[in-house]
Amino acid sequence: MSYARGIFPPTPEGIKLLKSKFHQNVTISYKQPGICETTSGVKSYVGYVHLPPGTLDDSPPPADPICYVLKPETCRPEVCERVVDGTARVKDWPDGQVSEEL
Image 1 (cartoon, one colour):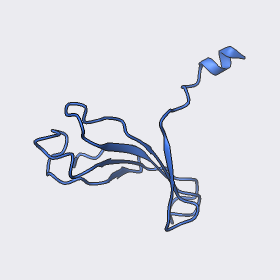
Image 2 (cartoon, rainbow, N blue to C red):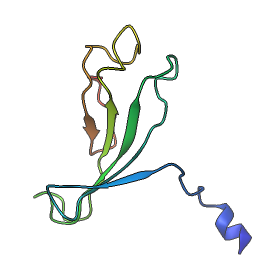
Image 3 (cartoon, helix red, strand yellow):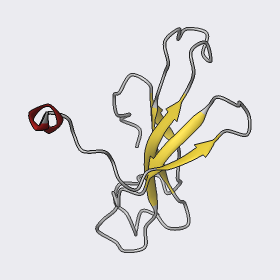
Image 4 (cartoon, one colour):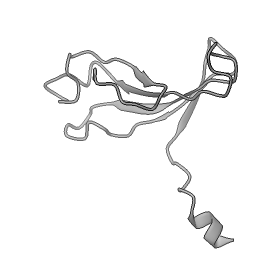
């Protein structure tokens, strides 16, 4: 039995879960990955928006797009070189592809 457990990744730690106030079955799981690690105090979050079947017209199976957020007051171009235009934007990639706009 220990061999079977060894082929799966470890259970993620530090994950927080929010329930949507707009739809009872939509949840968001996220954590702070420290993506702007070059400057201390910069807050960034990464996670998934869990959408139940039928939430999107073109998505019969469950859809879990990834989202990435940088807090505007802590992540400016002079603080974090990963933000190009100086504003924090939520970027979501339903197809799993990272946007070129960030």
